[in-house]
Image 1 (cartoon, rainbow, N blue to C red):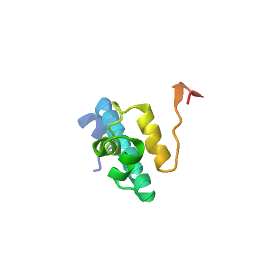
Image 2 (tube, rainbow, N blue to C red):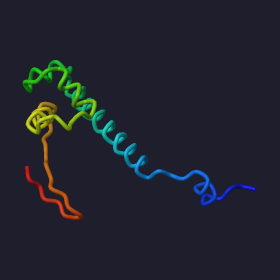
Image 3 (cartoon, one colour):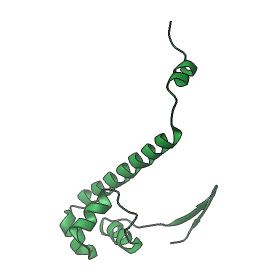
Length: 101
């Protein structure tokens, strides 16, 4: 007899905090990968982009690996402008969104 979902979950409880943390890591990786795609679509190497925006190649690599916690907003803005885009910052609380930059 097949096991029901409820029975399976009772035997294999899900740690929601762990699932959310993993989901956050995966989304960061997808975003970082997309930044690399944008750079490559613009025909730039990491070094060329770094030279354009005035940072080291290592800093570009960090951005493209999702290490944005210590990145300056201006650096991220220049990165996005160099690949043909722009940066928008929003203040979000509940369903309310206010663009601040």
